[in-house]
Figure: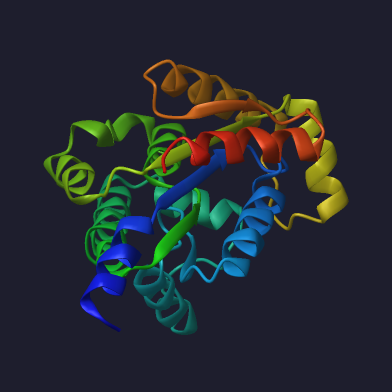
Length: 227
């Protein structure tokens, strides 16, 4: 590729992230956006992330489960008892954050530097909400390691938060056959956390109950203003 074409490719690339409760419509809107961008010849990467479920950590847990050193995946009494131990919690969070530093600080930055646009299903602030809900006693947002993670993580060009009521999330998750859906209580806490974070201006908030085309048009209008 000639230098001029490479520079244009770098100028056109974007980091776009989608957040929200399960069933809010993230997958639908991400797929629609990526289909449209692919049609224009844009080089794309799709990334799904959640703290504790990143590639290296997932591989580590798989190895440990083979040796029966950690409980099976999914909610269980054994998992709850294991994670209730302070040492286990701290190790779990530390490894999770270190893996996210690799994903966001190195991998995502590399993709952007090489002219790719990156579309993320969930991002840094979704993981912070997960950690705060699951490990409130740890105050992970105060950790030096978490602050390092926020420092190395690229700021999105556009971030969208699709909001739907708890009842709608439960219904859509049931229709999708989610294997480990959140309880109504957890969803309610998560929704409250999203709204609180949204007040800090981290997302463009969109009503997920609007018709699919209206949501897509709102997203395109925001992205169009970036050009």
